[in-house]
Amino acid sequence: MATLHPVPVIDSVECIEDVVAKVVQECQNGLPSRVLYLATEASWCELSERITHYADCVEAPYSCRETGIDVWVARAIVTVEWLAGSVLVCGHRIGPATPADHDHMVPPPEGAAEVWKQAERLMELVSTGGPTEEPGRIAGLLKHDSWLVATLASDVLNRMGIPAVPQFVCDYEPDLELNDPAATSKRPVDGRFTETWESRISVDEYALFEATHPAYAVQMVELGRMVRTYSRQLADSILDVGSGPGLSTVMLAEMFPDAEIDAVEPSKAAFPHLLRNTSRHHITAHNTGITEFSGRNDYPLTVSVGASHHLDTRMFLRGMKRHTAQGGLIIVADEMIAKFRSAAERSRIITDHHFAYIEQALAHIREEDLPLAEQRRLRAIRDVDRRAPGALHKLLDEVRLERFFYRGNDSPWHRVRFTVLELEALVAGIDYDVERKTYPENFMTLAEDEGLEVIGHKRVHATLGTSDLDAGTHVFALRNGRPSDVTIGPS
Image (cartoon, rainbow, N blue to C red; front, side, top):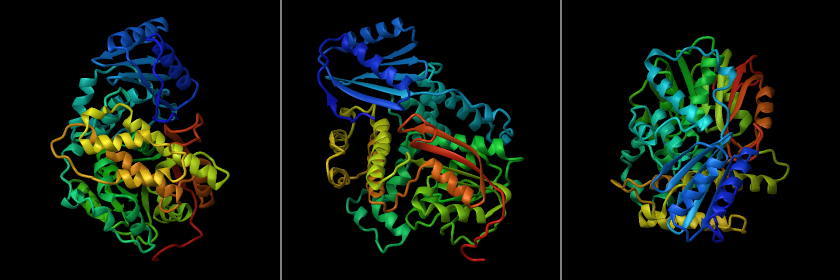
């Protein structure tokens, strides 16, 4: 991934064609994304004329906005934005449409037909990047009652160069403590996982801004597809492990509204958010961890989103297996990193992985559109030299200040604040405190060691590398094939 540092001034307006062509080729050749900031004195009229000339020369379709152009080519989409004195070129690699292994899915529940229809339509835009939808029509879905649909629409618009935020995030009424700058220092640290997590990552902000995470809803749609592909019939009960504040749990309930869901979450800080967010659905929340959970052991479907990397992977898998019926299905969606061979290599990969999400979340944001505190935060994040010793810890200390909630402000400030969460996770990951990410091959090996059969796997969003086993957001389907030899927690 490129750094967010500006590059020198474009020598001539014609150079923009070379820059766009370079980004196109890099993404076509396998780079997941590429972000470049270039200083320029050229007008947008001059730049846009050269960009459309390039698109015409390579016979690529394009769409124009007031100060932006999207160009679609095979396997890549490139967005160019003029930012008053600079130009942003942001490329994303795109893949094929819905894979063949989902051709024979169980039909969606009748009560979720509209959610699935909208989700599949938006997923087609994610996978093909084709200019088949007007941004205004997609923007209307930001207000959809479904959090899944609204979040997915936000992701699609961001890929198109519009840094949108779901309406339910904008409408969220936070607790008053969130407006207290000292609140982040009030969390206890006594060595236990949940309290350590709460001391390293702002759970209150996690509850608010996680919906702006690139590919958050994409992983949920793929999770749902795997459920419909590998289930003999749709489960009437689901165990959700590590629910956090409940965003993914709500999305799960929207896709499968007829199922009774038990949500297990150990964090005392996250649990009130989980109760609040899930109150409208058939969801029962349990303030406990999976290894201590004393519920039933015959769930036909057990799922987990974004939780495995916070736990001992083997104990996490054993806990899920213990509560899943023989022959039952386990789906795990989470971030994974590339394979590493040393602690130093792991730290470098962790850094590049998290900065890939940061770049994607911030790529299209105009500094002048933000509140002043968020402008300062954005500049600090974009200007950091992430390889300098101690730079990330110092940056985190800086951007943690003045964390206020801006009621009535319609700028995409929520995306800037999401990147603070990514920095918190990144620093915790380097310290190997509450971020214990592994790589896909190892995760699948550990699953097989626990008697779980790997029946499906897909990297739904890439951060580093070209292989399906490289870093990014992954979804795994596991079958509980044999009884566990190990008993954990209460009998």
